[in-house]
Image (cartoon, rainbow, N blue to C red; front, top):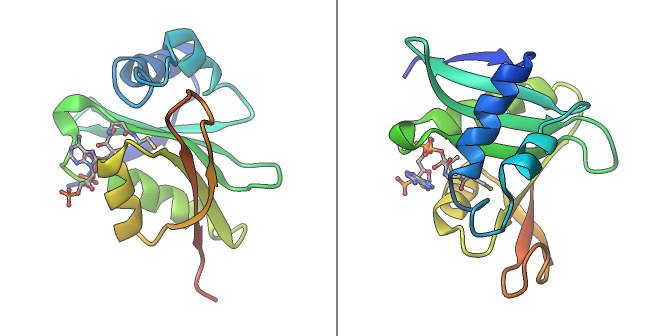
Length: 150
Ligand SMILES: CC(C)(COP(=O)(O)OP(=O)(O)OC[C@H]1O[C@@H](n2cnc3c(N)ncnc32)[C@H](O)[C@@H]1OP(=O)(O)O)[C@@H](O)C(=O)NCCC(=O)NCCS
């Protein structure tokens, strides 16, 4: 599907991304409300939104600096777009941009988020570690890494 992916630079755009996250698992289950979601999108992260025929279809936020660079902070498809390729398109966009700058892309996924784990595995992300009881007790976060082919 031909999603248009552009950088989100306005406060209203970031609020739309945070609303999409805060209404959905895993953020609901992890107790990450709207304010926490909005904060997780703040600079220096780069946030990109996907649109189809003008409609908001999903977003991705990337932490471009630090030891774990590039780190995908968030990827979220709007509920009505899930399973229609927007998550794959957003990750492909980020991979194209950031594999040009460095060899690794990292992402965390909750142990209960089996659907997202399946997608990341299919896209070549491998488990690099387990953060036990990391955000809430009883749920681990898996740190995944995809390495660029040399
Ligand atoms: C995970 C997510 C970003 C994937 O984006 P997507 O556009 O739905 O995924 P795609 O259409 O590109 O690929 C489909 C794959 O995504 C995964 N997936 C995860 N949750 C899904 C959902 N609710 N609906 C459909 N697919 C989902 C599956 O692996 C699916 O592959 P399958 O059909 O073989 O099972 C999206 O479903 C989403 O926003 N889920 C809720 C928030 C979330 O879990 N974000 C990830 C945090 S680490």
